[in-house]
Image 1 (spheres, rainbow, N blue to C red):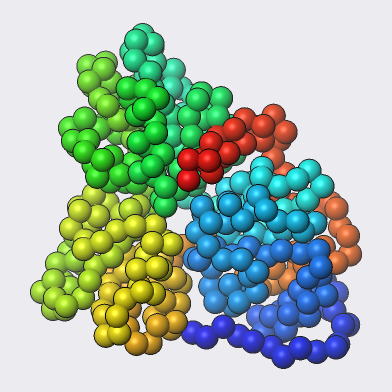
Image 2 (cartoon, rainbow, N blue to C red):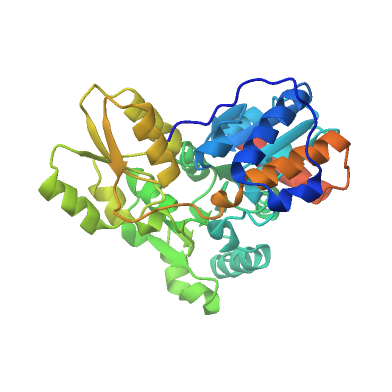
Length: 374
């Protein structure tokens, strides 16, 4: 689908907020165009690659988690609207200056993976693991950026770091220079796939399940393990299966399989290539004409790649719609309401994301460490 473009217009009679309920998406998009032009001197709009085309067409900056995190630290706009999910807006607020305001158009735009690891569960696991080890071996905590601000603060407080799918190998390598064991959360697949690529055998990795006593692990397993993986996953990327790869191998053998490292180990290990969202985009962008790809990642991005590179064949690895439904919550109506709040100077807008200062200080330690290592 092509991005919708609306011609410039001098009309500035923006519709009142109470009329939103009865507005169509088409009407909202026209109004967003007007408001964004009016507010551009004090507004930056960030859009994650998984947003739908209508929303991404308004983004001043697009990217994956790492790129947008880096971009956040350099913005000089008073208002920053993040079209993504909650943890991304939190990260932006952590990196921004105190006088800047960060907005998430729909507070229900969360992340199922991030919800799989709560701070009390992680602190309990940390205590159990270190008690068994009797502090004789140092455990380095690494959290995937797809987590809440308090988990970022946890790794900052405990000499750990944050990673993204772009820099996971570099960050995990750093962690093993600092200690003997790794505690990786919340996505077990990214942790397992990256550690395996770094030469760590599967039998030296164990899964810590917070819903089981002691994580479902014996004391012997805790002592013997080199890597503790949290029992979390991405609902989209876990939907890709080895049978889908087998189908392409049989029916379209010329098609290259490229997947995101949040996919399961079998899918990751049997694909032709794997990497972050940015890596997938760059690989397809630089492919010679006539190349064919089956891509194991979110469908909004796959469809956008197919539209952007018509000289290639780009399709989803899965026959089913692999959509990030929480990203999809950022609809034109909610983006318009956020821009209306900015226009009228509503400092009490419920869509403003503000991280506690104590949490922010510790989380910033971990984020800055990641950015320096990246």
